Image 1 (spheres, rainbow, N blue to C red):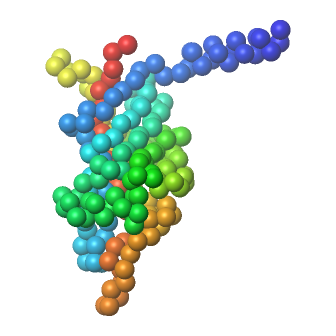
Image 2 (spheres, rainbow, N blue to C red; image 1 turned 30 degrees about the vertical axis):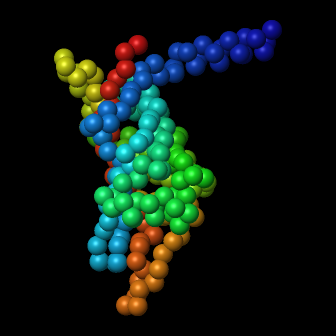
Image 3 (tube, one colour; image 1 turned 45 degrees about the horizontal axis):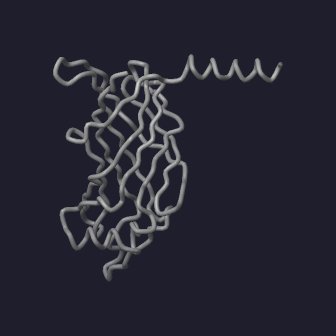
Length: 195
């Protein structure tokens, strides 16, 4: 009997406090981008064109939000077909073996105003590590034509060597062709789904 009461209490707590509002990404107003140092002196940019997310939040400031973002690695796009094919190869993403990059946020912490910190499990190339990224929450609006929407920008860095992406080549003048740090810049416009 005691176990039954405990189970019912946990179930009611989940029902009462679990987020009810689900948000989807408007891909036409969103992007998942990155850049990396090239030849020490400059940066090369790219995006991933195929991704999805499970986002839930009830609070107006998204302070209770939960996120899980999944990126299809074969969708990498740097506006150069030869380079993109190299990125899909075993030197980098090895897309046939590791078709996705996943970021499951375990903590979405409001710091001040619109500034947040996202901490979660980042999985790439078969390696999972906890990372913390910065976020700026743009707020929530309701528009008669576009529905209820929210905006979020996520930025930060991950060391690709930590995930086994170690392809590089030394230059005669010193340094390496590619940097270790990959800078992330994601801009998400989210639409509240009807219940």
